[in-house]
Image (cartoon, rainbow, N blue to C red):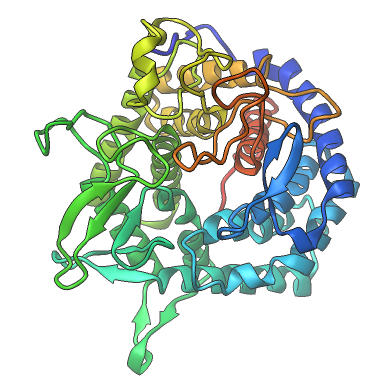
Length: 444
């Protein structure tokens, strides 16, 4: 269980944030000098060097979003110019990519951050440039919303790249694309010019995820622990009925892949913040979202080692050989199961946002406590020869994609694009809290 420091203040993390941004600048320059576009988007490191793995190119928005966040935090125009130019040159195919559910990851991290900074006054306002970002965000939300499968109860979900039968927990965080597109006044046009509300589809997807992906300890199955999250739910496409849980990147359908849990934690917390500004009375929607957010955050607190860094799956078999592993800090160099620092970077922001939204110090302080761990050794990388910023992350343990160093038995010591990006996003969030700046949101 996470050991929550109730006395920790955001300002106590200032030195760690300074170290992070200094290291981050060097990492971005290093990757930019070595990256070859023809090889595809960088995904994870092997012996400290970023490599690509063609699957869905879902990490490119994190690659180019990173220098935009660097500019956000430091004001260094070198990084704004880099992020803006790379977005213009390489991100257009991601806007109209009809084969993935990852629109929020790729496009809100790039076009969305640029529009937000312009509207916050950090970038000189240019009407044509602003319209360029707006059109990209309007389109990406509509394309994402078109990946729609209806459920038997009249709701529906944005289906994953596995196909129309597949609901992923990951998508809770990519729903940002629908929300920002709706905020920009856009709709999806269907057959016979039917206008389809992007906000309605976002809410329906969040509801189906809350009802089927998240568990509440109510006896749904023999493994129904409150706050547990499945990675995937399979639906019968003939009638829209739920059939069973599944998992692509977790250990099993009946354990909890912790990065998927973190996507849900942050996704619900952010959408609650968004809907507070979008809707007047949304008590019904708020109720199921708060329920899902609190359940997942509570599960994270209870099933994560004391320093806030989880192992990659709560049911991973090697954990049984590690004794009381929840009663001590995570051990990235153990011989049994890898930790996943990228899950912690995502979860920390979810805890902070939910704690602030609900005014519940337990979540807020847990988020700060986890962030403190991430901002120090052995997780924050200051080694200039390593292109990654956040060490000890895991991509796809079941497929064996993660690098195991010589002399080790499980993956460790490597980084991933989404882990680095979300650590930076967490740092921007905390920096604005410390400096009493504009509260960080995705919809500006």
